[in-house]
Image (cartoon, rainbow, N blue to C red; front, side, top):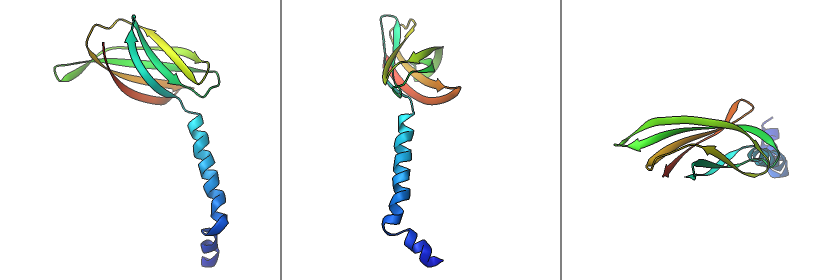
Length: 124
């Protein structure tokens, strides 16, 4: 038995499981959503989202905190449901922010499951 295990771990026989693992990891990366740049201007918070390239409906939630006096305080929470149409998408959330520094928690939800969560700092 020890000889069989040793042979399975050497040579071309170990390439098949390794190739399957590489393909699985590559395919897993293709099904995820990611958040790119987040910016504010003209009364809109703009969130760049990279999707899979196929149409899909997702939820976008943003929690906004003010940064002042060495602390942060929640200002508001907003969100929307949107249809991604391609690989690169831009979502505009209308809201009003006064000049200052903000910490944003951005969540992307697909099929009721949180897929991505990122933290971004912006200055208005």
